[in-house]
Length: 240
Image 1: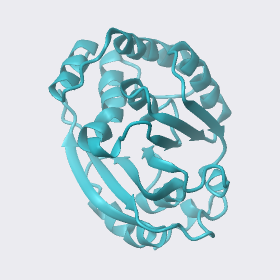
Image 2: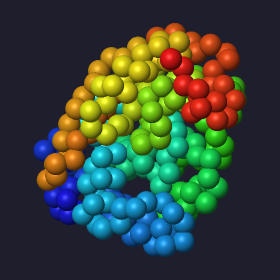
Image 3: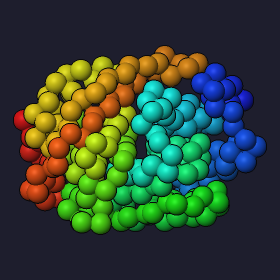
């Protein structure tokens, strides 16, 4: 998917990119590839692949669940790495208030410089592990939308993300193909942490055979205080 196809594909979904937004994606690509020579941000560096597997992939929650993205919504991106999915979402929705949590300082340094170059405002970068930050009153149950992409299995991921989601807010997990078994294994975790699965959307990325699954979870009750457990535990001992 080259930049022109990216623009056309978004137009099919009634998103007309302004010139400034086109330039932001262009600069994002250049910066990502340049920084990747020094910091391990991504294995994907070809322009067509970045536009498809990073930029378009990051925007799929907005195309699938547009109603969730209300005006001035607060979004927390857990383990965003090089800024996916939150930065592409922010470029499309400038009023989105974004908080990015990542445990690696080098990635956050890249994101800080990127945010400045792209002239984006309303982005907060938090250095820390999701388990620790999830117990911090400033961030706990504070966000309308929580996203995570390619971070962990669903049971572990739910323990990372649902503590950040406010009651009646939504957690969107961006997963690969055939996430049924993973979702089944995470039913208890989702319920214990206060979530309820609202929708599972399977899709294929355009101009490719790549399959993706989006899982939309509504936060229906408060997360018990003991979650998330201490750093490393959700990964070692997922709730089953």
